[in-house]
Image (cartoon, rainbow, N blue to C red):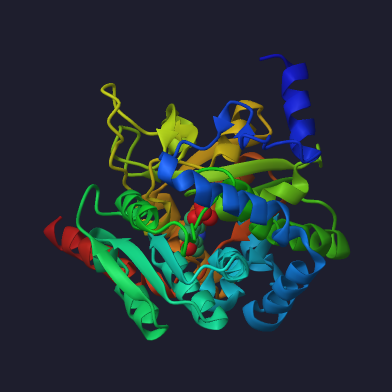
Length: 414
Ligand SMILES: *Cc1c(COP(=O)(O)O)cnc(C)c1O
């Protein structure tokens, strides 16, 4: 691909010409769904093009974002961490949003849309449980019953979030099929949706799935970058580099979008490097994957030579997914965003460092962005760095305790 092709694709993205009418971001995206879902997908696409853009809907959304979610979220300058890194470090604080992560921006927007198109029930999937909690809260707020599908492995490692979902009135279904994590949960949520696509609304939690979901979720999360860009310009200048962690890719696409046209700003997505580079040891979809179709879209995926989707690994449940949003696949292809990875160990270290230096306990997912930024700062001293802090780490206390006790046992054995 020539640099002219790359520039043309970026321009089309900036001009809102991508995704096209088929939901394609260049070669990626689209809608690979069973025929039975097409009426529901068409209805949603129409709602995204009409209802979503009305002043009335946007006003209602804005009112929920300020009055209920707590937006705008803070931009925090981190002087102690900056001294340590030899950089100027800023955090966009999605951990301060209601329910503790960026997921709520998307959940409340889609819950309002579900209500507006006359759905009587919501289904959702969840990995770390953050999207389940956000959806449960948003559904309670707009008055819709909801069922959340969650892999059995995640139910075990994110117990506090399961209790929160129940408390907020959601039914939680533990999924024991497939990889028993996020991918299997999405399969089950889609299966549920197919049985009654007319009155059930599928509230997807990341910038993935068939068109129009990647577009809808990006538009709902774009508020992160829009706020951060204004806040940066207010208090400093544009950053040299922006970092965000990438699971399905919603907090990152939300943070990056406002900066796509700023040529001088380098953008970095940080994937989960897990315990190593072999298939099955990580969730580094863009760094190590190949194109293929999963959950309704053509995108980058992790699969073996027989075409079997790989079970992924990450210490953070929210990054444990073998696919990624199609817009990221395009941004990687045209070179506008670089995708790197951070290992479990690097991310755990970065989490400890932020606790000690700034008094902020980040989510394990967000710690990957910190780890990626820290490595880059070592090679690029004296730069200004903006990091998307996608969520808070309270939900990770059980896994952090487990990691600590494993380490103690190892130390005792050595
Ligand atoms: C779910 C989650 C992620 C990963 O999802 P994206 O769609 O890639 O943003 C990252 N951070 C936190 C705190 C999460 O809850």
